[in-house]
Structure formats: structure tokens, C-alpha cells
Length: 332
Ligand SMILES: Nc1nc2c(ncn2[C@@H]2O[C@H](COP(=O)(O)OP(=O)(O)OP(=O)(O)O)[C@@H](O)[C@H]2O)c(=O)[nH]1
Ligand SMILES: [Mg+2]
Image (cartoon, rainbow, N blue to C red; front, top):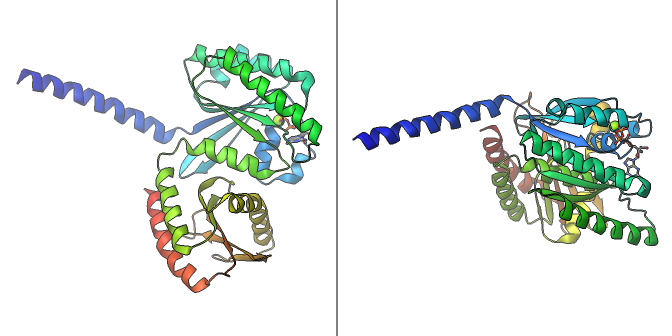
């Protein structure tokens, strides 16, 4: 009797704690931190994700900590872009609780084209990790080897790959940190940024697994080569590819379909549920908004079919069923 009562009390205490934690999480946005030296490319990465390509050419150094927020799967994400000029870097380290605390995900950007500042960049990385430890937080640390441009000539590419391997080794040996992940990114291949950020952010959302399963099922039903669901911030919520070629082809086109769609909306050519169809050398692309209700922000579906053109009648029929399931997962 006594035992039961006692355990009941403990149980209650525990569930209260869990409940409070959940409540806290519900209201507070996830904090994503972008840090690294000045000129590393942090702001350019964020602008690429927002498809604000024209702003990249005129970029000024970021002044202090710039915050923006957006919603992903119904949760608010607060994006902190920490300007990397020397005086700012020092002030972040002096006041770590203000800048680093509550970081849910950290992205550290290293300019791999600027060999002369690699040591400085590594040194700041270690400072940041120390601050995380001081604050007793353990956000996944995602290191972007940035400016890994597609047009690097062969010799440079080999040198850079060598450098990156050395850096990884050094980080592994120097930093005692549980979750470190590496990405190769370039603004000249927007999909490197889109896929890295999507992978990183979706770790925060347990329901993304269910979304992924639903997408795979739907893609098989359509018998297509590839299918991607993406939101308006270029975050890939799930994807299916029959093979690597389809993956490459579809992934590389995402940013351009989204941009084309932006143009159509801007020119008032876009009606709800309008789809864009493109055919090139036996590859058929279909880009289609997913809209639940008029007021909600749309998601987008991009499908690749090889050989056979789309049977739009069948796609539309199956599509409505898919949208209902998708909506249930997203809104609950
Ligand atoms: N080659 C190449 N250049 C890039 C890439 N990304 C950004 N840049 C250039 O790098 C420069 C600095 O980019 P920013 O985004 O302002 O760098 P930042 O890290 O925000 O710098 P701070 O705001 O001072 O901390 C700009 O001239 C960009 O055009 C890339 O992938 N490849
Ligand atoms: Mg900046």
C-alpha cells in the first residue's frame, strides 16, 4: 500500500516534469546558431536558403547578432546569424549566456578557400565549444566546409580535400564533443545548402520520420523516379529516389523550381494548385503546391518521372489522398 502510494507520487512528480518540459518547448522557438569568422559565408548561406540570390552580391559584413525567424512544421525557428568581425567575436565570448545559451543546433562555417585564416577559424571553433561546455549545453555541432565550389579546378580540389581531411582529424583529436557532423557547401550549388540544412533541422522533428514514410509510399504508388516535398523556406521534409542519378537531377533543380514559382507569384500568374510541368530529354518534372486551406502557407511537391509522361488524372486522384494523410501528420 505504502509502496504503491509512494511510487504513485514519484510517478506524478515525473509526469509533471515531463509536462512542464513539453509546455516550455511548445512556446519557445528552436534556436539555430550560425557562427564562424567574418567573410566565411554565414549570411550568404541564409540568403541562399531564402532564394535571395541578388542580395548576396551586395552583402555587407553582419553587424552583431542578427535574428530572424520562420516556421517549420508548425514550430518557430529562431535563426541567429552572428556577425564574425573580430570585435563581435570577442563580445560573444565575453557574454556567452546572451549569445550561445539555449542553442538547439549550431552551425559553424569555415571558408575553406581562405587557407590563411584556417588556424584562426579553428581557434574560434574551439572557443565556441568551450563556451557550450561552460553553459552545459550540447547542441549538435554542424561544421560547414563552405565555398566548396563546383568550379574548383582539379589541383585546387585535391588540395582542399586534403586540407579538409586534416581539419577533421584535428577536430576529432582536439575536441571532446559528442555530436559533430560535417557538410560540404557552396552557394553556387544551392542544393548542397538546402540538403544540409534540411537534414540538420529535421533531427528536431520526430514526426519527420512519419512524413518520410508517407512520401515513400506515395512515390512507389506513382511509380516515379523521384519525389521531394519541400516547404517555402527550401527545407526538404522528405524525399524518395529510385537511384543516385534521379536524386542528383531532382535535388539540383529544387531551388530553380522554387524560384520560378516565386516569379509566377510575383507576376500574379500563380493560381492556387497551379502546377509547373517541364519536359527535358525524356525526363518529366512536375512541381505542384500542396495547399490545405487558403490561409496556410503552401508546401510543394516535386516529382520526376522518366520515360512516361505524367498521367495527371491519376496523379491528382492519388494526390488528394496523400494530402489528407500529410495534413494529418503536419497539423497534429
Ligand atoms: N566562392 C564562394 N564565395 C562565397 C560563398 N558563399 C559566400 N561567398 C562570398 O563570401 C563573402 C562573404 O560572405 P558573407 O555571407 O557576408 O560572410 P559572413 O560569414 O556572413 O561574414 P560576416 O557577416 O562578416 O560574419 C561574400 O563576398 C560572398 O559572396 C561560396 O559558397 N563560394
Ligand atoms: Mg554575415
